[in-house]
Amino acid sequence: MKATDFANALTDFLGHYLTVECGYSTNTVATYSYTFSLFIEYMETVELVRPEKLSLGEVTKDRVIGFLSWIETERKCSPSTRNARLGALHSFFSYLQYRNVAGMAKWQDILSIRAKKSKVPEMAYLTIEGLKLILKQPDLRTRKGRRDFVLLGLLYDSGCRVQELIDLTPSCFRFDETPTVRLLGKGNKARVVPLSGMQVANLRQYMAEERLDAPECQCHPLFPNPQGNKMSRMAVLNVVKKYQAMARTVSPELIPENIGCHSLRHSKAMHMLDAEINLVYIRDFLGHVSTTTTEVYARASEKMKQKALSKLNPGIVQEGKTSWQNNKELLSYLKNLRTKH
Image (cartoon, rainbow, N blue to C red; front, side, top):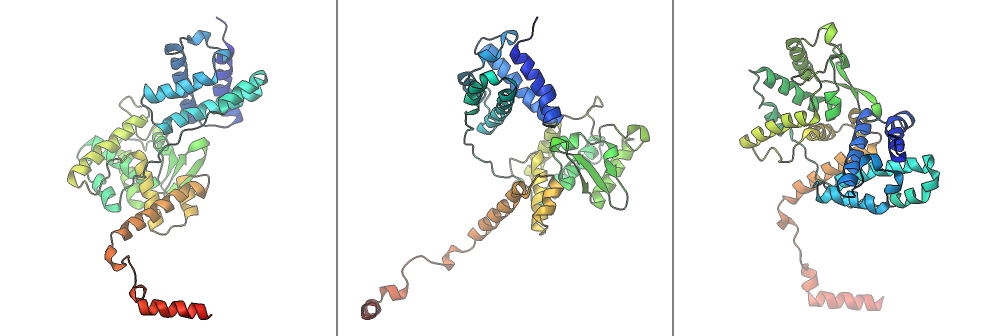
């Protein structure tokens, strides 16, 4: 069966353009691939166009808009997820402008689809006390509890993203005078961040117990699943959610409801900011491209301070007229004074 022009273009886009020409990471390519899996599913189930018959001619602006509406209504995706899917589609049709110039007007028509306004969720992070409470929850008498304890501690101590954690192997660590971990972030950009002494001690104990300190295990996943492969993102989230729920039963005022994996990264950044560490260093620590992204923590910190200030006695400054405004004789005098001058 001969491949359609859509299949050929999509294969080149995902297999060559994104990786070779744009230098995107395998995780980004996987995210884009999932978007097109959903689009192909929509075209087949809603537009009744089978995958083997899907050509570029079948792709129109109305159908792309229909797809975006479908993932919101049928798949219950949020506007931010809808916008992320649109971003992947925009990238593909931008690519087509150079690979299929005959359809440029059509591709530009699709590129004109706007992103939806979406509410930016409030950043969830933990106080030092809240973080300590979560780290007290794993049962250190069990092998799994000890693993979870080290996993949670590393998420916070290194400020790593979930995928960066999943990709870690023993070879990523250096336990010399200045212990560090090498993280491979977005766009395959590597960074080296320092680790605290206590986290290093916990890591070395865990690696020794799991025999991950052996030379032949240097490329094995640091946190493997039962099959010995990398943990999934959902598995890591389940670990965080498990101990978040346990901690909330102890002290709900310390643990926000919307805590997730990224919240530990947010918490590290906020604690660094509270310690008056320069934003430039926090940017490098987190692996941000610019301080513009990192400034969200500064804004959140200011909001937190404003919220704390609002709890002060509001009666200190009172609204209303001052005593001189109620003094008719004084007002008459001021009016005459202004007339004379």
